[in-house]
Amino acid sequence: MLDDTTRDELRALRRADLPPKVRERIEMVALSDVGWSAPRIADHLGRRPQTVRDLLRSFNARGVAALRPFASGPAPDAERSDRVVSALGEMLGERRTWTSRQLAEALAGRGIGMGPRQVRRYLKRMGARYRRTGSTLRHKQDPEKAERAGRVLANLKDKAAAGRLRLYYLDECGFAPTLPTACSWALAGDRKLVEYEAPQGRRVDAIAAYRPHGPAPRLDVFTAERTWDAYDLLGFLRALPTAKAPRVVVLDNAGLHTGKVVRAAKPRLAREGIHLYYLPPYSPELNEPEPVFRQVKYQEMPRRSYTTRVGLREAVEEAFSGYGRRLPRKPEERLRPAA
Image (cartoon, rainbow, N blue to C red; front, side):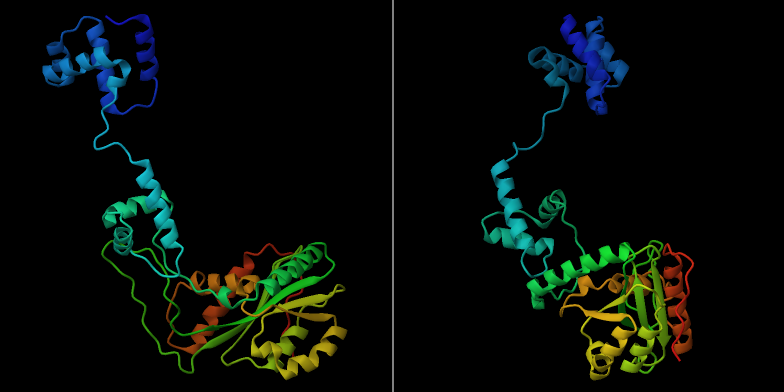
């Protein structure tokens, strides 16, 4: 017979979220407490009488701890686990790619033997994922210049939010007839195929002025079936909506932006209220149109191949328009092409 303390403990356990096996063991103990024999309990629960006897004997010896199954395998080796996690973290920080097999071989070289499957278990517990790699230019970047540019841009954003200036980010992007590989949902066993079209002479270029900060974000884009030149850029700058506040345009160091024609036009642009601010070299993370171009190229154009340049240009314009329509903008004069 159980004492009152043990009965209260079993009642509390029954209200907890328990595995079915533990609940069944509690039922065995409870039925035994009201006088049921082991064979009767076994018949009621669909178990063998010896299974019930073993559980009751273990419960008498160990108490409530006997209700939970023994953990199989050896006791966890915390020291070894820490060694594995530390080694994996160090290796994943190296400038190279890894598969689980390669990581297992590298661990073996450090005196830690385990297979690729066990390595994957550790990686999942560490929050690691098997992902596509990306490109970076940070190794060519001047950290001091990038940090200074970040502070300048933060100041400009604050002034734009306060309405003291209009802050634009200007950049160009090219689109080929066959767009980069993207992802898509597909039925099991089916793989979507994209018809390849050669890009020679059929690219479409877009030039965009993106104004994400301020009371009325906007995106203005021109497209052309040719490469932009400096005079196109100057015309686009002068076509920016006029405003009482100065217009500051952020650009990267592409040759189109820094050529003689643009440098010679800077004083005249300044008199018109248009000021150019150049980002430091190799700082794409500071250039806010980059995510816009990525979204348009990979998400806004579900058709991934075009047989004509006209069709491609129409698709590019519609993709930018769709993205721009979702910006929270106020009614405002749209960008007018320069003559």
